[in-house]
Length: 65
Length: 407
Image (tube, rainbow over all chains, first blue to last red; front, top):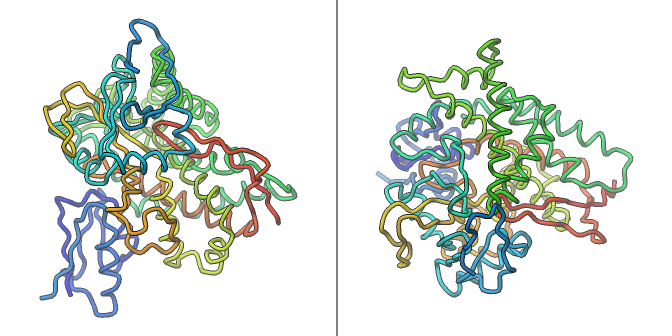
C-alpha cells in the first residue's frame, strides 16, 4: 500500500500528521508530505486508512501498486 | 422581517418563527438550539434565507458549505460575518483577505502556528491548567467558564504572541461586544474598532522601539515579498489574534466540559487510558465536530448559485461549518456523539484556503484542558439547579458551566 497527498488540496489541517507522524510530515507552513515515498508498512495500513478518513479536504488517497 | 435600519445605530429584531425564510443567527433561540434548527432546516431545504441584515443565505449541508468555502471567485472574505450591510468592518488578515493577497498574508503567520512550534507549548499549557485546577481545591461547586475554560486560550494566545495577559478582561470585553452587539449596532462596532486600533498600535510601536523575541515584534517589522506591510494590516494581524484566538477555543473547551459533565460513562473511558491514547484524539475531535463553535460568512461578489439557490453580488452568505458537521450525508449517525468516531472529516476549522490558522493551537488547548480537568475531577457533574446560557452568532458555546465537582 502507498499513500499520496495532493499538495494543492492540502490546507494544513494537520490531522494526518497528528494521527500518523510515522507516515507523513509537515513543512513550516503546515503543508503535509509523505515520508518514505509514501510506502506504507503492513503494520501501518490501518493508520493510513485513518488519515484518509480524517482529512477534511479529501487530499489523501491510498493506492495498491 | 426586512432590514430597514435607515440611519439608526441599533437595529432590533423580533424572535424568529420561520428559520427557513427568516433566520437570524443572533436570535436567542440560536445559542441553545442551533443544532436542532440546522437539522430542521436541512429537512426542508439545503439553503435558508433571511432579509434581516439585507439579503443573506445559510447553507446547512456539507455540500453547500464546502462549495462556498472553496469558491474564492464568487465569494469574498471582506465580510466574514452576517451583519447589517452598512456595518463598519476592520481588516483582520489573513481571515479578511482574498486571493491573491491572501496567500502572502497567510504565509506570514503560518510558521508561528505550525504543529511542531505549537507542541512546544504543551508543558506550560498543562501547568497553567493545573494551576487553575488547584484554585478549585476545597470547593464543592464551580463555574467552569469563568474559573477554567475562559482563561486557557487567553494564556495560550498571550504566550504565543507576547500580548499582555494582564489585558485579558479587556480582550474578553471586546470580544463579547463585537460578537453579541456589533452585528446589529454600528456605534458599538466603531467603538471597538477604535479601542482596539489604539491599544494594538501602542503595543506594536513598543515592539518597534524595544524589540523582543515574540510574534508581536515579528508583526511590527513584517514584510511580504521584501515590501513592508502597511500599519493597518499589521494592526489587523493582531486584531485577528485577539478576536479569533480566544473565545473560539474557550467555547470549544466549554462545550466539551458541558458535554462530559453529563456523560460520566465517557469520562470513565477517557481517564482509564493514557494521554497519548487514540481515544483522547477521537474524543476531542468529536467535541469539535459536534459542538463546533465558529460560523463564518462571505460577501457574494459574483452571480452564482449554491445548491440550486441563485445568489447575487452584495448578498451575504453564512458559512455554517457547525451545521455541515451535523449533515447525515457527510457523517454516519451524525446526531450521535461518538467518543471513538474513527471517520471524522469535520470542518470545525473551516475548509479551503481560509482554514483556521490557529487550529493547531486550539487543538492543543482543547485536548490539554480536557485531559487535566477530567483527570482531576472524574466524578464532576452539571449543576442542574442552574441554567446554562449559550452564546449566539459567530461563536457559539456555553457562557457559563455550573458544575458540582464531587471530588
